[in-house]
Image (cartoon, rainbow, N blue to C red; front, top):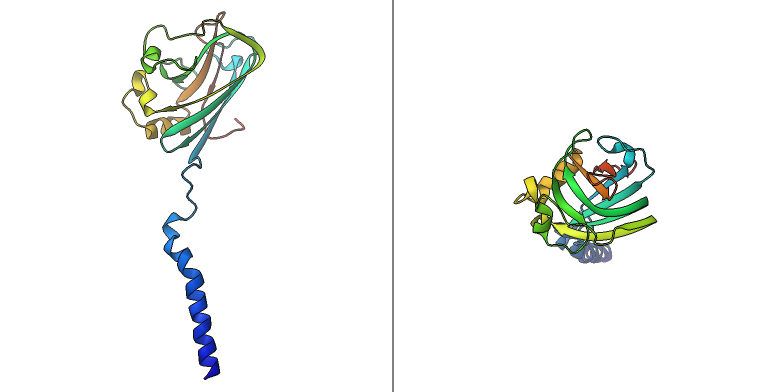
Length: 184
């Protein structure tokens, strides 16, 4: 009789301990603030179309969570930076702006015109760092009205690139395809 009581007690303890884990199994490994996707771009003057003989480089990193892209852009060895965007296009074509990155704080529709906004005072430095966020509501040009999933798909297929612009190179001083590999 003691062994039956001990066995029953052991089963009750196991069930009591397992119940919270079982009742929250649908929440397994979820964190509303954790990024669901991460993307990167190594931006160089040599990747510009056509290539430019400058030592300007940049690194772009973005994470996507809850429909919002949080991004960082570090630009190195730049003279007179005027603006930065994400453009639609493969590695050998120049394409239209789909998201404005710099200057920060501009209205979305400002990036949808023939002359996008620029810094009032171009930026120069050995290392300049910027960060911001955007959602699908900030898409312009051929991405206007599309969903965040469309941009994520374009990141995976390297159909979009980050382009930084300067006074000397208004069409683009350096660029790099956005992808899911931080080493590319």
